[in-house]
Image (cartoon, rainbow, N blue to C red):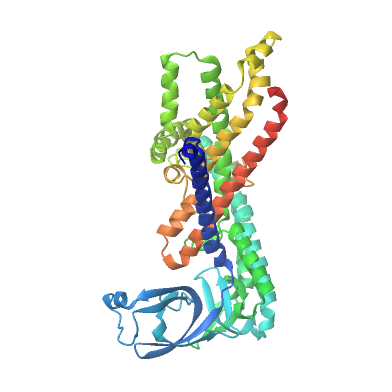
Length: 537
């Protein structure tokens, strides 16, 4: 046994076990987040409950969101009447009833002892809407242009409503946006040169175009004004739901397994492609996905050349003196600075100082409304570039240190200059290490939230940083971020129960985005390693 310990085998097994345990923990966490998040989009069965709450009998229709076993003693301490409960524990059900505009809360808590019977609600429909969340009810008839028609015509009505909404969205994001952009440019010209007759004529033409587009929008909205769906809710009341507010309808208790899978995939597609609604508790997260990926790519473009140049100077040009050692110590210590400190630095230096100076020099005609002197995606990318710069410098310098000096001496002996040796020999051989630093930088930057709250990220961005208006890339705009979206939905949402599954879904999506970015960088690194392997021979 003593020889076995001296051989070091126990430590090898201990290390392997620790690594295995870490992998199992990480995979288990990912599976938990994925299960909690992706199961939210599955069409859950809708039940009809006959309940008796304090002697008041009623019918409740909804999905079972959560089932939990609670202590009777805990319920008694909370002031619940437990005289009719036998035993020490009882099941408590969290039911999502929807119909937010007709009840105070779209969730209700029921104890097992309060439920007289529970059964699947036959032919119940779940209606997804733009406002007020989901509606649970029994469709009665479809009203098309004021005339009552069979419910079979609803599918065609929903398709027509979707086409009208898409046309309205296009008019708002293209025509109206273009007119507003031209009006803003005209206002700037008037501030520079004063009111001129040609400016007045241009404004009149733009006003006429705006009036025409506005009339077109009014006509489109009027097309859906008289279309509605009559639905009977859980208390037997007939409700009129406007078609223009309806996004989708499905009958969860009537779907086959394949239809449920298709619906599940469709809901996930909408989640990643649509804009958020209802204070981020409904709809999708596409602006947050776009903002996260765009910000990380912009940060990568900034941090990579800065980090590589700094590493080249420290390793290839700077002498080994106390000043160089001080710089290396400072670079290493920068990696330990709290991220919120970088956010304060970015707000003070980039936003107020640099951005304010840019506004004074180039955008003085737009003051006091700031252009670059306000948080935006450019300042967020620069702040995260400074935050991740030490990682890229250290990784690149380690890659440069692994290249034998004989390679450099051979290149110089053949007549190449030091700059040519660096560009054609050293940097290609160090490129895998550079990509490793970039991978680590992306992994950290994509999950950072604290500094972004100060330098550019917002709860809801009205437009994306990219559009069809010149200069097409608007680095001064604020943006949405998946990490901040998780924080906002999880801790700032007015509807906690409805937001909880979205926290898991968005977290899983953020992990997926980070893994996708890292896999792309790893693929590039492996390609570079194979391409320049011959230089190592």
